[in-house]
Length: 131
Image (cartoon, rainbow, N blue to C red; front, side):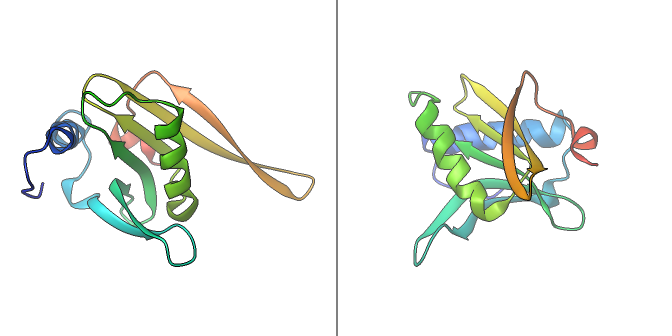
């Protein structure tokens, strides 16, 4: 992973991304860090990390916080706003103490598309992410 200032949030990011590669089989080359996105007219933000498929489609958006920052609805809302641009089917929120994993299932009914969030009790392995 890239060398960055050793802030508490960066330590969480480095530890988590290392685990994705070493324990869960994610290809390091398919993990983007500080990915720029546009979340509205003239509003540019950065996703902490995005995991891509081999065809470079976003699979997972990850938002990191420092250990003293609680994972709350606000954190989930932030990731959800970012995901309106990224369109990843998985979200992860992590602060080194708590990890929240969610899968977003898109459903169509009566010509309208809705999203349903299903919280998971585990981090999916690389092979589990792939369709």
